[in-house]
Image (cartoon, rainbow, N blue to C red):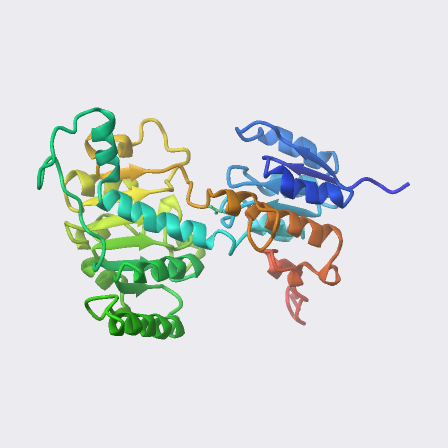
Length: 379
Ligand code: GLV
């Protein structure tokens, strides 16, 4: 008798995508609560012999999970682009592929960064609050507050991978000067295309001034920009020659203009939150809008909750990819859920010659590449 293929999802990623798995004859169990399942439950399901585990950023998939799944668990399919919660080395040791959902959340995340930049700069929250609290007394040229116009300003894009570039393209529409910084890669082709779009906009008199785009050092980006938007992965000191952990620290805030704003839709620990708190409190920068934090969900006692900062420090709930299309579409070209289930199908049905190294959504391809002669040999 054919053994049933079983999939356990730690969160409901939407029936449209999960039905695709059911359509393939798999038995799919979904953890029904909105809070994450206890680790013991995940381990119990792995021990019971599930073939695939669907996870999100909140599930710690560590060495113990992979060891428990050795020989039975065929993949971990993460419904997110980030995978800070997954122990890559352990996955490799146990030869279990894990997948992510890069690409499909690029535009959603980039537009969110763009919108929260506008929201904090144009004081949308204080304005709404004024109306809500019925404190709007009259129209006045400057009272009770003014915002800062974004159009025509200079924005620093820190990290020019997919999301950073998508964000930069949106900023062209606001006729911003672009300062690009990337610790690893300079995409000069991208610069050339952006520059020609800026030229066209100027020729057509869409933009009053001829706007500019250029790669610069981090120091220059921080010193010159009116807005600094972070789009780097989280890289710890121990794992990278170009770490991003606490990239935005006390020294970085001191470099920024007093009138500048910081935007973060990347990873929380890229910012030293205590340093940010001090910088805001001491008016070293004008404001910030954050979607990610050193600890998530944001702790009740976080200094970032200081009511004195509220109007200038806008806080969101790791929501940048949170659109219906991006989160739930069953189409792997559109949605995170679609990409997650496609990854499950690829691995379980042994597509791409059954070789995880050839599968588009597998992250730890290195664990499946053919070993070169001499690799791992001692003599
Ligand atoms: C969201 O932050 C993700 O990593 O998917």
